[in-house]
Length: 84
Image 1 (cartoon, rainbow, N blue to C red):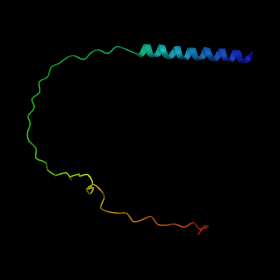
Image 2 (cartoon, rainbow, N blue to C red):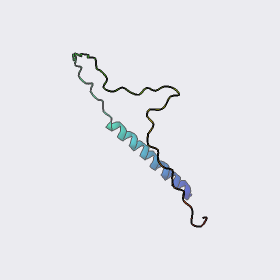
Image 3 (cartoon, rainbow, N blue to C red):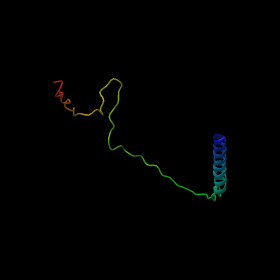
Image 4 (cartoon, rainbow, N blue to C red):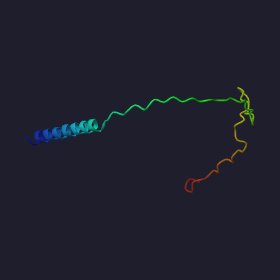
């Protein structure tokens, strides 16, 4: 009998929680007003820009110009004191 009462109380509490969430969600939602429509006129001018730097050329099978020039030394080999 006790487990049936516990299940009913859990079902009632869950239903109440869901109902409360729906009510809060509905009460917080409000319609936003559409922004006022305005018209703007813009004038653009284009000028030719000369590149200040030339990008490296990427060719298939060619050297990678973005690879680092410094190569790190290999990691030191450590030996475990017990295994020698």
